[in-house]
Image (cartoon, rainbow, N blue to C red; front, side, top):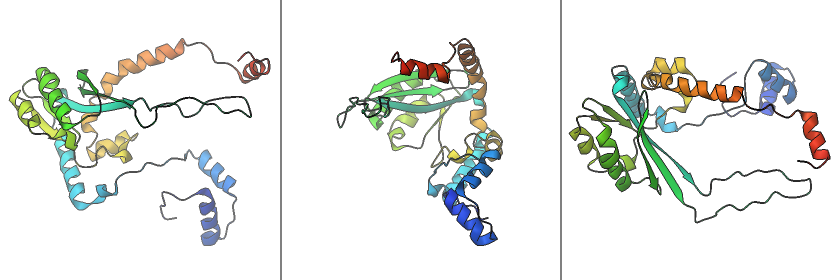
Length: 245
């Protein structure tokens, strides 16, 4: 059967009947996939990644990654949170709605930016508002450059906000070099597949960061190991029946 990313269970059943003369209910198709570990998911990516010029630039980047020293790399990235970010679901008694206020139209945004190295997160800064060219240039000159050492390699996303005049000059004045990721990076098709990522070279640089996550994972597992036991179903129903929860 030809690969079709967005085909549904009903469409699969109809296709099996049309092409092979076998009729199956959608529930049978679902159980077939579930027993073989084929889960229901989909990751979308920019179709421009398949353009020849973009493919060539990503191939050159993959070759470059194999020659970089992971201990010299500093990945610049940012994340943000806004006051409109709220949980959209809640619980209430049958027949009643769960209502909660959420800021609408006039929310505030906070941006966190930092340099991720193989052993630590350095040069952190919080910006009151979304990231823009002026704010990023101020971050590079005031926060990032003092942490750079001669020979460091600064890598960052290929964004307009990361390309104001003065960014490259400030980084190179500290003895470091600047690299921009290829267009439409990272590739979501490589997530969760380390082997494929290493074969393509696009994950070579990030592989050096895996060791730094080990201690954090161990602490997380230790914390969950000593967490209080969860309620069983019958105890939950009993508490709800007696209106104690």
